[in-house]
Image (cartoon, rainbow, N blue to C red):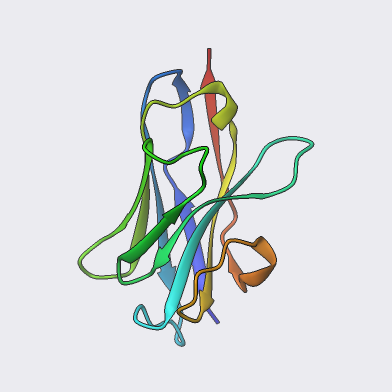
Length: 126
């Protein structure tokens, strides 16, 4: 089992920045064989892909809507992944989730991930 805990959400004005964190733990977790993804879900909408990379910090991919504004990265201990969000827009308001799956292929669909955090709210005011 893998446990994921997100933090860092909050309220910010449009144009501002936030950094989300996702800490992984669990006896079976191995940063070299897992992929991490960030997803978000706004009220009344489906959960959508934001960004993904191999947990050890390589091969990032982004949704077109966040490319150039968001950056996914990891720490040197390879237990925490970050989502740096700059130039935030009201349309970025959502609950943000991190997710993990064992495997190295690129995965952009929520159903492809096995482990999920509890989510953290991001609200961007205009």
